[in-house]
Image 1: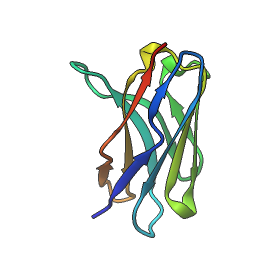
Image 2: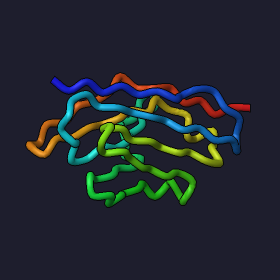
Image 3: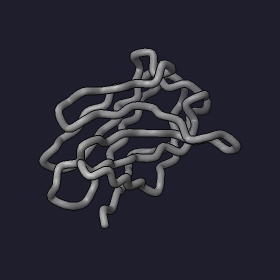
Image 4: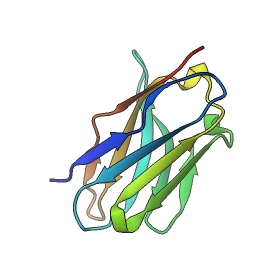
Length: 115
């Protein structure tokens, strides 16, 4: 069983930055790791993903403000979020996908953007 643990959420003011981190347990490099977010009453939505080879995919609303990166040897993925907006307030979830199609989710970390 793969354990996925996120960290780095918090309360920031509009325009500020946050960096989220997520680590998946185990020695096998994950095929894909990524970030999703969810607010009350809405479906979980894609923020950004990155494959083991470095290919990235971003949601349109990222608008160049967010950047995803990873360290394969550590099975760790990062999400650098700059110029945060109140609309970015959500619980951010990390997802780790194995080469065999298994998907594992973290418990989520709260990001609140408010003045």
